[in-house]
Length: 576
Image 1 (tube, rainbow, N blue to C red):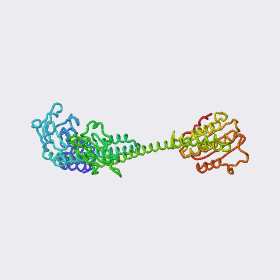
Image 2: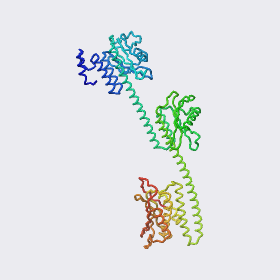
Image 3: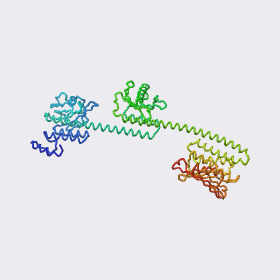
Image 4: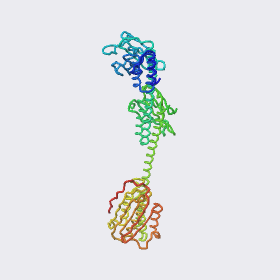
């Protein structure tokens, strides 16, 4: 029946000789009023799943319909076994939540235990009367308690109470109406409880998914095994609402063994009995490839052990510890997704550790190789130097040039073995090569001043070796051919960036090149080698400019190593 049918109801009441008050539909008496009250109760039950709002409407409608002083509803709490006042309307001074009754206590408690309607026209003289409801020191004279029961047999939801200060008799029609109303209220209560349970379950699932999302994000942000294990332990306890967690790993190198990876502080001091029991459960889990729920009476806990499986193998198992009386998780799918994700994370961390250890071993071997090559080059340079001192003048110069080239290669090995094997800076390379060349050609005589300046440009090991040979050649030529014996001058080495290119220049203040010099047609062996190294190995460009002020050799190439962003400060020239 809809609200707009009020006029029809009023007309029916008039025809039955019962006046319709203009105060509202609850004021209707008799069958029509009770019918409309049921309609209002059903509306309250279906329009809102808010339990308090629905109960407030119901007690107000029932009190006005049956014409009592107080209407109240007690709800049953199965966990505590008590009835708690949840909604009331009328002159009762007790607010919701202020009155709690054990089952069987008072008329209300008796109705809950027997699950039958109790009518006490003379309530104070009823055997189960409880002297708690007073108004101005007056007890309620009459009371009706109607149990609210679930559709499942024996399911108690609460009790509907109606009380009157004046003694009165409740007619069979009124009692029948109250039983019908109690049935509608029970259905509404069940729906509200189902809604609350569904809402709580949905919120719990959302929280679990958020935990999984946090784990996935953390896995993507770290490969540190210990940090990862702490995260997995914390999230596993939160996800399963467990007391503690223990994580075991099956090492790839020793698949028959189990290694303890992590455990909660609560179980760290329990000792060998729990560890032995957990290892036995984990062995079964890994052999059977499934989760196992088992009570460990000797250890006083229940364990839920789940395998951690990747696409390749069983990494280990996560053992979640619960009280002995705990119930097995009804929805283990999220826990399985969690442990599978943890397995991938642990295996990635293991592979990362292995790769890091392998790289460390390879780096150590490569440094040792550079050390041995450097020693061999120094030995060859020493032998050639000894031969040059004893050789005739016409072969001494070629031998000295060979010694200079070998020492330049030795310099590269020194830089690489002492710093980053992947590359070095041109500034450090140029400083060392120039120092060696000037000392070889001029000895301790300070007639040639030299400097190294420019941007910080990093090159790979391969390019560093080529640049060492080229710098040795150009600095040697600048000193040997740019100045007469004993003549003073300067040699400057500069490096700068031009976009993705690196530019290396060797400039001297010597006599310059002959006017007929042409780099493209020059037959000199040293220049041919320099062109090959620049154009073929560096894939760059070589240019030589000469004037009365001296000679400048320029190399343009693209470094293999990336140039760090934001770096461009020039270094101060070094003088010697």
